Length: 325
Ligand code: NDP
Image (cartoon, rainbow, N blue to C red; front, side):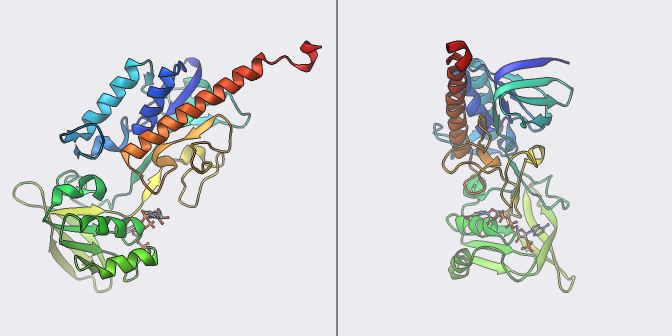
């Protein structure tokens, strides 16, 4: 077991964590990044990416993350195959984190970039057809279903927003909800009901995702929640939008969170209520949730961490009352 005494610890390795690492390393903070259980984050489970600026042609999500990681290492980030299982923020900086193998990280600044994960239905065919017609992100993948039949599953803000977004690409969008009353905001509902491209389908759950002969999604087996009756809906794309879960278990009781479990930050900044602890990316953002916005807040976290570190150094250099007299 090893103890690492460092200036900057980054937990999480998606676009937010890696951007914080790139900026942190270039600011000579010699960051250590602990990758967690899904190295590279959510982009490693998407296929094509064409909304990340800087690439004229379609790129692959896993490839993009490899590039970000290589860039972070190139400028001096040390990346650890480890998962933080315990953290102590009680006495302020330096903070103490413990990895699952018992290694200990004592860090002056902490950047939390643990992300959020889309919730899945957990029914047959869903996992197998991921990236082959089944997705949890319309803004990422909707474009690939131009002119095709698509369905969105869910009745909250995310589902309605995804359905509305998909009308940019498809004239045939079905919103499948397990009840007959949407949970989403009224204004979104109004937009949904005013769209002639979206057809709500009430009281239905997805029992199974079905593959066609080419191995991609061809339809859904639905079950009526009132009658139990089964039916089939032919679709080329299905977007599961039943909520996201931020990865904040580790910070329960240690940092303030909103009702959805997202970390609270000072508005417009990545600052948590503990000086020296910053949160960036999807773990603090339930609104935008894009790779590029995560990268932006990761950069902000590193810049603020650098300022915090400078304030610590300044405090050390200021003579105390006793030594000054
Ligand atoms: P929500 O938890 O609000 O909604 C999830 C939806 O999925 C509900 O309609 C729920 O049904 C349904 N659902 C959950 N589990 C299942 C299941 N196993 N099978 C079928 N349906 C299921 O999640 P959202 O992602 O929509 O929103 C999360 C938070 O983010 C909310 O606070 C939301 O307001 C916010 N948000 C805000 C946005 C904005 O302000 N523009 C945009 C997107 C999200 P039921 O209703 O029956 O429980």
